Length: 265
Ligand SMILES: C[S@@+](CC[C@H](N)C(=O)[O-])C[C@H]1O[C@@H](n2cnc3c(N)ncnc32)[C@H](O)[C@@H]1O
Image (tube, rainbow, N blue to C red):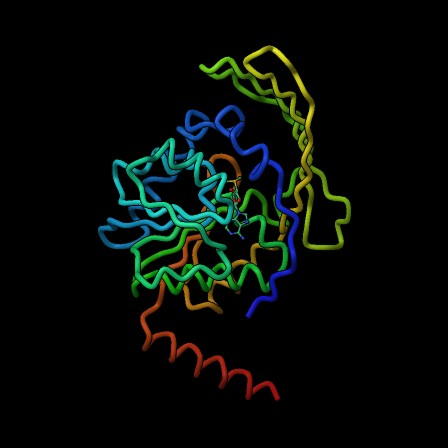
């Protein structure tokens, strides 16, 4: 069982959540979704249902809802509200990706940029176990961390949009690794928020993300009961696809693992 520490709620997903559509709207995800949809559709046989863990504002999900029946989950009620406005036809459920249990099975589970909030091995394993619990045998999880240890690339970027409601947002994003010896890195944002009245204020938010080696991801996926493979996408990200083994194959793998363990003693 994962011990959930009292975690600081990120401002971007709480008091600043209504600004998400000006920070990262569906239009920013069009190319990514075009690249990812064929991967999802090929990950298991004729998929119809998809559960997303950590759906955020539903900007990526927006591009999949015509092809798949989506259940969108997040631990932030404010972000689910944003997603509901963008994806009113989809089911939305509040829940932590490490412990969610909807008591039913899907054909696909997607864990996109929320996975980086798993900053230790126990949280990653618990999140993958959530995916496993919600998949029918033969179903598949698709996990896309922004970086693995081998691809980490510090940098800065800027962006933001103007809304039809007269509001505007601009940001500076700064990605860096304060300690290359540990398994985390940081992203800090400074936001300029312009209200419809023209009033502008400055806010900031600092997030810590998990950063793990490719081999660690593959081994966690195997441990939880998936057959993993991965590809590099056009944005140099590792896209991990894990197919859920059926019960008999999983038991066989456990017995073989135990035998190998004994052999080493
Ligand atoms: C970068 S946003 C996702 C944006 C999303 N890809 C989109 O298209 O709008 C990350 C989301 O992960 C959620 N999150 C972080 N940790 C989580 C956890 N332990 N369980 C569920 N959701 C989590 C945050 O609340 C946030 O909404």
